[in-house]
View (cartoon, rainbow, N blue to C red):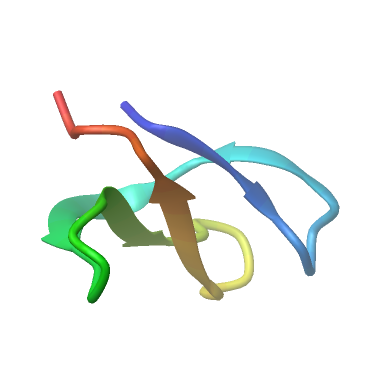
Length: 49
């Protein structure tokens, strides 16, 4: 699983349903949601595994 920092929960959490995306500038990122509060999370520069 991919970990990311949740701003609302103020801690690292494992992303729920991570998906690999490409940002406008071409950099890879992983987009998912926080399992606790449901906030959208981004992990920039990391490919999903």
